[in-house]
Length: 417
Ligand code: SAJ
Image 1 (cartoon, helix red, strand yellow):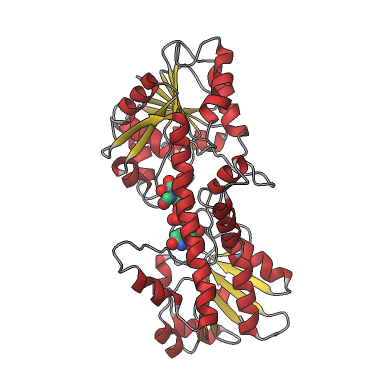
Image 2: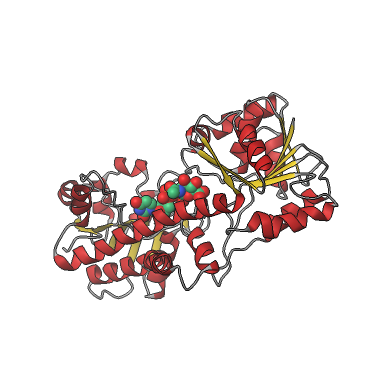
């Protein structure tokens, strides 16, 4: 069986490599020639644990190669980005373009699977008409459906295999075929449903997390004015067998949780009230942290602020929708000089790779991302390099006593000083 995967990013590439490892002939498709050339050399241009080795093996086995436009295949997977527009609507241009290209090579008996997170109804209302330009009829001549990826960056390979999966076809036969396909490497259960439910499942899962994080962020603000440490509060509440409050922080980033809830709001603006409010709450966190920084700096003019961490979450090299970049922008608008350190994205514009250079001369250090390597920071050395050693921890990551012993004035998001 020959499989074609359009979109060789964080999802498409590991998926393609997994199918190749399972013995299928896989052709990856991407418009970006840098990605295609790298893959054909057996290398990758992104960072994900274990992915470089998996891709190298797959390419060396002769079962994985890449091209810039699709060729004939038996199964087509679409795993391209679905970003949001300025006005918070799903931008389906990449999905539509991928389907247009597939329609040109589609033949009777093929199966087309959308993996990209998409608004409910996408398979039926957007993909079907485009693919039918081939002259073939969906659910009669070819199968079609949605099987959303559910993997978490940082643990993609492990989760691709072990997580449960949803197979949602536009008809029962499509559902069965999708389930059968993924069974070659998925060890988790594969639940059968229709395409529309599968599309909504993915949105609802990520929205659950966004709403829960918004609740934690709201609690953080409440605790600050109530004289309670929100981190202690949440850890005690979570000892209750039916409570699982997420963690507060400087905001929600990434291409999924900060984006997908809008796909629900877009379709049902009058009904999606909590979802909309949660999105605004989380999007407001960089501003909230900037206000807290202002209070700590007590009106000092043109302060120098060092932010540790730039990515959207720890131990990844992905900066999409990173709340830290919004925080930096908010601080700069207020006249602060902002330096950002991040070992995962050093060399990118505005990102410093040397933590001491970043912190030198600063009036405030903000711990923005809890990268594991920040456990090894030499706090004494950093405090000595500061103009005024003040630390604002937005993740409850740095031990207060240790920071104070090193000479820092320690502040924590979600706890009144
Ligand atoms: N965050 C918090 N507090 C928390 C958890 C996360 O502030 O308690 C923030 C993170 O710092 C980050 C953002 O939320 O900025 C999102 O991070 P994440 O680790 O929660 O999720 P993603 O975006 O990396 O991956 C999510 C996952 N969805 C769920 O857990 C429901 C993953 O399973 C999905 O496959 C992925 O979205 C996706 O591709 O949709």
